[in-house]
Amino acid sequence: MFADWPCPGPEGPANEQALAFDRDRAHRLLIVPALFEEANRTRRFLVETMRRLDAAGIDSFLPDLPGCNESPQEFAAQSLHAWRTAMAQAAAHFAVTHVLAVRGGALVFPTSLPGWVLEPVKGATVLRQLIRARTLSAREAGREEDSAVLLNLGRAEGLDLAGYRCGASLIAGLETALPADEAQRTIRQAELGGGALWLRAEPGEDAAQSEALAALIAREVAA
Image (cartoon, rainbow, N blue to C red):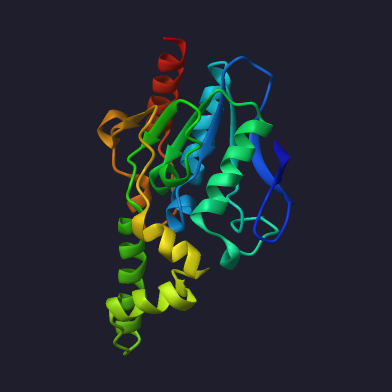
């Protein structure tokens, strides 16, 4: 089911949506998705993980980041600060006890809560991959673009990257952002088995990986 949650934002408050498995149980998990296209590639995997968590007696919530999917907010107005604020609000609204962040989602982890980060990545790495994808696309179209020039433009005016209009604030935030590491346990892909789903060309799922991730969380929550 989908649940609304009130979200502050640079354009004012808005109602955002979250996929929710909510039976008012003691253990409640907020899932912070990966960023950009990696979020699309891993969504089905996370939904299947949520189904298994539900069977294990754990409530879970997968909110949209403001500006993404069905969000009423503009992507161009977003920043890492806005996303951190939004995830903290979602955590409070759903009264979660733990957080799981995936890849770049670790950059906006609500640090007041314990939990896990699945293969966290630095903001500079995310930004470098996005700019590289743009330069490769330009080259295929017969144009040459310089990554350093693009980065300078992004700092000043924002930049179109992988189909997203990234504002200057988001570019600047990604350049220096590091994954949260205060009360979080890092989960490596090897613990789940199989290949990393965010590296696939198309969205996918892996039942064995979802089962492994849900079992890991259920075991460590109960410890």
